[in-house]
Image (tube, rainbow, N blue to C red; front, side, top):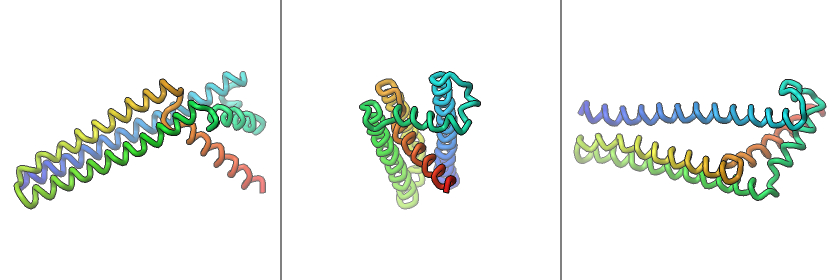
Length: 170
């Protein structure tokens, strides 16, 4: 009984740790992308990155970002589509992991304690979906110059910035 519980709890703990690592990597990557974006703007406008925060630069940055991430560009539409595909893939992976885990716990409780060892398959399923997601993201980046959904997120950020600026001006 203790070994069965250890398998189930251990696999949950492993999934949790891998998920934390994934979130950390995603956060680092987002920060890196922001840094590269501001370095690109800095080079385009011929100013230091620190000078981009000035009030007179904000309209130029908004204009540049709007043009670069326009939904009228095919590469941005493809990036947005890849973002949808990746989101669906992530949800599918999560549902499969949850269903498999619930089945293993159910079989462990109702049939045989030896079934608990199969809870480790959830880690494998998670890693499979994660690796396919990374590969898909890299292919999208190679084809479009953007990560999946990056253009859509940039358009959202511009809209939010404009909304905030309007609210502050009132």
